[in-house]
Length: 277
Length: 265
Image (tube, rainbow over all chains, first blue to last red; front, side):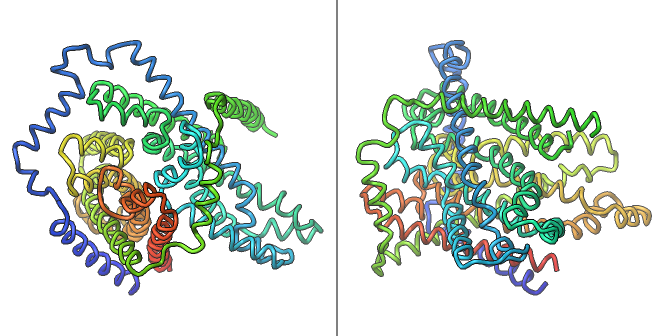
């Protein structure tokens, strides 16, 4: 408990220093909160979003605007599906060799030098990809791939590869070794043991994590779309810079519809995966 | 095999087909007419990885990377502290354990849960873009944008943790005449605290990433420097900054996992 207490005190000190830095050394704008101008600006922004004073009909009341932007919402959904499938395809063959108890032979089997090396390479890859946020990956990837939904999906997949890969490998490390050892003593080979014991035990966890990440990914699609120029994100940025605020309101509505739909879908699929449906 | 299991199996098979269909549809929305990798993309890709050996290691640039890392960390910590301040009271109400009358408690809880869901349904950078348009760019605007979705997730998790504590000690407290507030303060809170701490430390790691991408609206830090170096095609500088990013996340991860391990034992 002493470590926890020290960490807590450490965090409080860190929080004080951080807030002091932000209030003193950056343009904090904390004084703006009391200015009437700030609030009238914010009020204006909301009025413009709703389109109160706009001479034309607000975009969210036009059926054809809904249809045009609906196409972009579909693209965004496709980006998220592509991202989650890419993540799954990349993690599936690598999370077993990325688990310590598989590579060092704790589950039975002979540890090989190649397997150990592969374990460290995979762990490094999980850490590297996970530590860098999706938007930064997207900024790098647009140097290689043509703009559209693909670079966005790849950027999302790269980051989530590290997240899901690490979580799935940890699941394997915490598995009950009993069934695997039983198979082993019944004469199963290394590969058979992995395929018939470890893999089926870990699979529901892996799928659950993947579905959870889908909920995060759909929220982030708009953000990577800012730079990868695909789906709602691109249009979001354009509407903002051209001051088309009622269009922006419409895009936010689509964004919320997508987020709610994916949250519901993911919860339903998770129940199905764990068999508690 | 029972009828129910058979039904489950069938629905799973149907689901697999459905998901495969959805995947094919997502592929069909990709524009395959143009090249996937643009001209010079492959050369840029090779150049990017070649620049890792070695990254930019001049003392001047390392100093810059260090100060950028500090800026990002400061934003992350400030965001998380505000998120805890927002998430804690909302989490208490969301757990439905504040009021003596179950009906008002439940009504409040449902309302607050909806607010929490709304806060976290929008990504922090989208909040930031909107807030900057409404309030203008300042560090408080960005910290608020960071704290809203994080407060939403912390409030939800805190609420769930309050409800997952064992009933026994709570019943004992109630039997001795403690008010709902006392039950919360002396019963639920101490029992849920270790998990709450562990989860908050884990979220700090995510906040570092979120603070870094606030460069998109013009906030200084690691993301900002990465953007500048990418603009000038200085990939060796980009690698140095990425490695600082990785180093910071790994350090916080080690810290938070050690906190969680000492909480368990």
